[in-house]
Structures are given as structure tokens and as C-alpha cells.
Length: 101
Image (cartoon, rainbow, N blue to C red):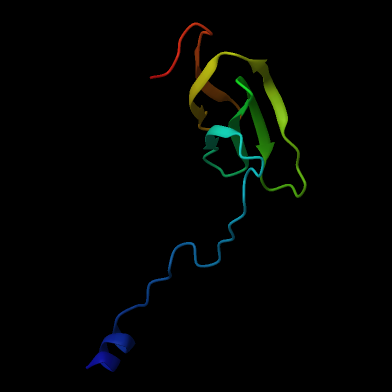
């Protein structure tokens, strides 16, 4: 019976069968992150001693370094997301006087 099932029904390919995982950030200071829809870029918020900055990196390029797109400040960033075409990063910025609860 099992053999008939195997022969007559199409086999489904498993998604992510040939995927590879790698660490996006190794410094342990990332507080929020987003990956573009096409998988080419990653944006993350880096918190270094209370100063947060926004960085973008191209994933598919080996040894690609982070590009700081917003300099360090005491503001809080949240809701990171990319535009549909992956060309823009959107985020919420909370003023220095606001503290998350």
C-alpha cells in the first residue's frame, strides 16, 4: 500500500532544502533588525552604551561591511522595514526624552 502511494502521488519538494544559515551580526549589540523582501539587504539597530545607530549591510556580498545610515544618538528606533523594492529603510524614531516601558 505504501509503495502505491509513493509511486502514484507526486512528491513535494521541501522548501528551504538547500538553504544556508549564517549569523547576521556577531557583536551582540543589535536590538532590532529587518531583511529586505528580495533578501539582498539587512538593516539593524546597534545599541552601544546607550547610543543607538542604524546600519545596513548587503547580505549576498562576502565580507560586506555595515554602512551606518543614521549616526549614534540617544533616540530609540523601532519598526524597521524595507520598501517593496528594497531601496529604502523605514523606521520609527522616538525622541531622547521617551523611554520604553
